[in-house]
Image (tube, rainbow, N blue to C red):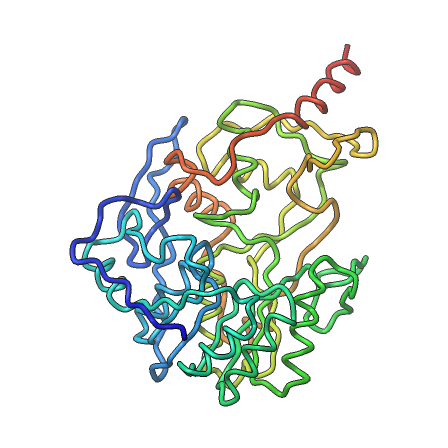
Length: 379
């Protein structure tokens, strides 16, 4: 049978994660950059009034979204357990986080070690412990959710991290929560999970982020641009560069996750969660440069159909208009993003890439193919 482990540290370590980010108290941090820019301070000190304390299980929780969310929930006074395979440390002191805050978080966070694909283990361990609320941050398939529901028949709320990628491609934008979905989407597992939750009569809430960015991002979103800006390289962007997309900061997403907890207006509802404004691909490249203090980059447009990149992706975004309306979350939940795009990118750069930390090494192979052909055409 599984056992809960309290992760405690008598003397908080001064070591930091391979990636760094600001704490929720808004500790003052500054960073020098290559070009003159305003002094930067972290934004997004998250203060949400707690409802009654809950016994909460987070499926995942040791990277990106879960790291921010778990700290928020602990600060709210909830008993929080992370269900993970135990491959990553459950707690590490974060840059800007005081020793007192880290010690407090470490003394309260709980860990349940296991594989969510071991369905019998999930059923036995969760039913033995019992939880009021489940936050499913890393669920991809409906089959992985059924054992959790079976184990917790008295569950008060199931809060799910879905994706705006479930929407069917359309010429009519932005996407609203009632829009047609694509059953063949690569995110179809998330769509099937939403359907399962609805069919089981569970009190669920599903959030559909678009592109998420911010410190500790393990997807090559802003990091892709930062690598090229730091190297002083042109930015290759497919086609016209006026394709419109949308990014939402991870701290804003974490706040949305907390605001739906115990919220009657969020019962059996789906919400798009992202940034307030939309941006073109060209505009995003320029925003990354502005946020990080680099000069405006040279942008090279290319036609993807003229190249064979093999299995490599030459650009980290889908080559289409892709953005949603967040009006439902704003009107029903009273939630709204705190970060505008440049502020959010500065937060990410200064607390992560600007400190020399990143998830993936720079790879300019596809860039060189594009630039090589561009130079031949110019000559």
